Length: 375
Image (cartoon, rainbow, N blue to C red; front, side, top):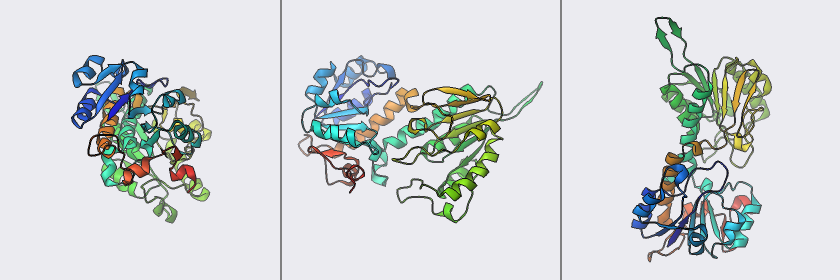
């Protein structure tokens, strides 16, 4: 089985789908790997390291021509899809939710597309879950960005000249990214609180030493899907929660928002009035910026200021840690590799496996994922 890895072409994307370490692992597992020249440079992986690992360094067209599978970070464009042979597999973060047009483009090109966003939330698939691995880094980086933008120190400092109070940090959403944000803010010395609509999050937040803030009524107790995602809450609950959060946010120095609902625009958690109630110098880091943002004033990929409050809409926080993000994503792909090959080492996706079923967008020229077919 021949795997191709290309340089990512999306503006600002510094990650790469294979590292020299993952190349070694794939070759040991029976694959041949071609890497486009300079594909890993933005993540500090030089071509020489790929060659030493056993990869072939080739031009883009040559990598695509013979590829049985294309490992990618972000979705390849139509031109790239058209250069793959029929039946080739494309695997990466394909942004599949509700995008029938892209899935159809993959089907029309005859490639079997698999979206890592649809990796099932089951124990056996945890090591392949790229959303979790990347969200972990996003939560960490969000707090680092907040510390850079915040004009004061995070920890309490007692000096001969006086005492500096600890920053107050509030994390909205206690999923993978949120929990990492809590842990990072705590390590930096902030006084941390957090909120989430999922009851299970309360214990997780407390275990990290943060205070949990939420309206804990009957609806709150039923606010989690079987897959572990947050449910969309009623308007009545949203109103009560907003009132509680508004009063809490006004006292915070740093707010990190992480709330996402798969296949839906990011819920608006912070409105203009809440921002205006915050102290000048406060910072909001909106991890959900790429999906519309949790803050009403968020502008994707920009830091805007309103009434002295800085609102940062970084849409690709994992990409701001390209070496580590690439290492984790490439390991997710290595762990998935055994489900893509047959006993003779050739490309043979295990279509009956629940993991491959869950990830598959297209197969044999047809769009097959239930979320895109309406089945």
